[in-house]
Structures are given as C-alpha cells and as structure tokens.
Length: 408
Image (cartoon, rainbow, N blue to C red; front, top):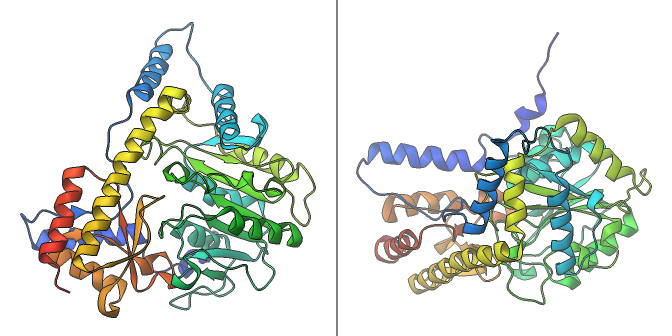
C-alpha cells in the first residue's frame, strides 16, 4: 500500500512567497487598474552583463556544430567552471580543491538536498529569522516534531534580535547541523570573523556541521567582513558552504550555483573524505549536472571582466537600498538591520503591529508589496523585509508612495 510522507502535513499552511502572491492577486482582482509596486520578493530585474551574454551565446553556438557539440557533462560540474570557482575562492583568501566543488542548478536546491547525507536523528539549529527552506525541508525530512503554530518541536531556534545585532549566540545545547546565512536573508546582517570563529570552534568541539549559505556574499563592501566561512581557521573541518550566481550575476531564472564540501569536513561518524564522497554519490546518482550553456555563462561571470560588470549591477541594487533606507526613515520607520552590505533591509513594524497586518496595510494604502517578517520564523514577528532588487524608477515610485500614502 502506497502511503504519503506525512511530514508534509506538519508544514504551516502555505509557503511564504506563494501566500504573498495569493494576497496580492486577491487585492488586484478586487481593485483593477491599481498599480502594484513591489519591494518584496528578492528577484533580480536588471539585464545580464555583456560578458555573460557573450559566454552564453558562444556556448549555444558550440552546440550547433558537431565538432564542438557537448552532451552530458560531469555531474560535479564542468572542469573549467570548477577551476574558476577555485580561483574565485583563492582571491577571497581560501584554498579549495576542484574536487571539493559541486556545481548545481541553484543554492536553494543544494540547501534542501545536502541534508540527505545526514541522519534524520540529527538535531538541527537554524538562525531565526531564516530563509524558509532551511526549516521546511528539515520538517519534510522528519527531523522535527509537530508545528506548535509558532515553532516546530525539536528544532533549535537561534534567535536574532536587536540585542544581539541580529546574529545569534551559540546554541546552549549540543546540536548536529547548524544553518547560518551571511549576509542574512531576511535581516541583511553580516557575520564578523569573530562571530563565525565562535561557531566554527563550537562545531569542531561538538562534531557538528555548519551549513553556510553565502548566496549574497558579493554584496559585502566592507573588507573586514568575511565573504566565505573558509577564511576562518578550522572551517574546512566543519563547514559546508553553499553559494549561487542568482543574485551576484542575475541568474535567478538562469539557475546556477555550487556547494563546497571539503574533504576534511567530518562529523561524529564520518572520517576525513566521507561527507565529500557521500555528496559526490548523491549528485552522481540523482543529478545529471547543470546546463552546459549556463555553466559557460558562469565561467564568464567569474572572469575578470565578468566580475567587474557584475559588481556594477550589484552597486545599482545597493543604490536602490540607500534610496529605500532614506525614504523609510524619512517616513518615521525604523530600519534596524541590513541595507549596507546586503540587498535587504529589516524594518520594525510601527506601533507594535503584527507583520501580516502591516503587509495588508502597506498593500491597501500604499499599494506596495513587502515581505512580512513572521514568514521567516518566530523572531521575525514585528518586522518586515524590504528588497532592493528592482528597477530604479519603480523603487523610487514605491518609496514615494509609502511616504505619501501609508498612514502611521
């Protein structure tokens, strides 16, 4: 008899972003003709840089000639892209081996899939608030108890708040898997070297593994802040890093990312090389590799000219961030984190409002879509996230609408 995975029934009613889309759709249908301005979902909007376009076109052209046609590539990623990623890490101050790099079709997939190499008995800790995929995929895998309406039994929430500058303290109990995102989505907070060292030391002591999401690392402009966890001594013994071309190169719809699983990374029952070989087996069993065309685009993005062009687009988004921050503060809203080394701003809801209530108020009064903080976890209640991704003219229009129409 076929039976369902009943862990799905533990999940909260709806995934955050589809619920936002549903509410916006309902409002738009009742109010036809009203322009909806979006500062919510973190989807890139600007055209791909010319160097990347050249790389993609050249790859397409190769497929039109039998002499240069390519079929399946390596499941781990094509050699030239893995070597480009190794070189990228070297420039960041970290030594990575090519066979520690695994190319994928995006960081979100890797964040979900990487847990398959760990036991369901693992105790999991997550930064809170956190990107929903960290929590929801562990619920689906069966590592949590029931949904209490606010939290999941058995999951350790590492609260991020004003008191700790939105970076959590170490768990007070022994945990096995630790999810950290820096720059953080949704708060925009960036971990310092000292903060990451505390977690690395904890993980080594407890034979824990850190799942480090660095998808927004290229938005860091402060040279004192780490762009990879591997600049921290000992991190290769306890950390798996996941990254993406989505936000740094505009590949949200193109789809390309990577994971680093160092051979020296160990856990309680896995010696040197075991986790690397298990992830390799998982990928070669369940994945046929990212698109050859897209991987050539990734190589172009990591070239000297490609990185330069990508940084120009990143600066465009960060100027959006400065415009948003200035406008929100002029309105009297308190931006408590982000917007400086990250494309997200974390904002306190006014007058003690609940996050979803502020979402509805923002939509109906200013016609602006933001992201309610409670959708990212219990510590997100009372806040909302604003995204700097968007066309400049639309960002300015949204900010002006908030300033002129939102009633505080």
